[in-house]
Image 1 (cartoon, one colour):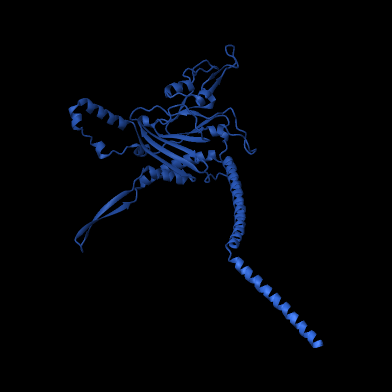
Image 2: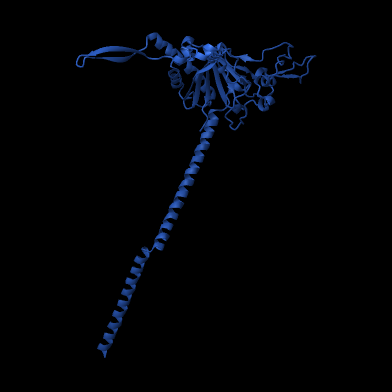
Length: 401
């Protein structure tokens, strides 16, 4: 009897073991089949993708925040560097003389290059047959020679010395001299020409250094005005742009209408020819002297600022007479005529305050609060006669990207 019970116990024990083993095998096979199921794969890839997207969104948010912070810091740095300079506390135009060295060399930049067709202009058959046609063609050709834009170059710089060197280089004021040697090749009995570049003479090198130093001083002067007081005289991190335009005749009159520039400040200097015309803040509004014949509230408005900003007039002459009335040069303090328009001469580097510094709001206690009564400088190009040569240098800040 005891042996029969032991056999039954062993039988049921093996049944239980076999059952558990079968269950384990079935569960493993089901899992393997599920991994090969497309639905399972889609759920798995979706979960992985969602995890990756969440990580990417978090990284993108972090990068965007860092860029916004960096942009804000750059704007603050731009504001500090390009804050209105103290020299514009009581005026909107400052002139400093930089005498032009070697003007004859600069005239090379305004000399037009004539093509063979222009240098040897022969009248056509119809021009010979019709004298009026020939004369009109000759007149048009002569007018083109006396009124033309010759050269226009632009250089961006942060180091004024490098900027000055690039200006001289692009103006091609000093072309290298070349020497050709004819040599005979005894092996092939042929003659070959070898071209070598000669070093410039000592006097030419001195002239080149003078002009580069002259431009360096001007560019440094501009950078010193647009720099922040706390830059420790290191202005090489300020990106600026210099432009030199040479012209003949009326084509050199770029802005004949009275206007104010939409920039913080601009340097304008004539290298050859007359400079710009401007009206300083000191004479823009001439107040009454308070005598018996004048009232303290009496004044002469030299510049009509409302017309300057809103006038819709295509005729430049009419617009100029409205913006700056021609009969407004009577000084109420003395009763005499006074000169209200300043004409810059060759070598006068004129700093003209623009609208950006006129409209700036004070946001930093480190700087002196600007005088809100000083508005942007009103100026225009001078009148040029046919055939009159002009070379104009302008320097601006490069707008932040």
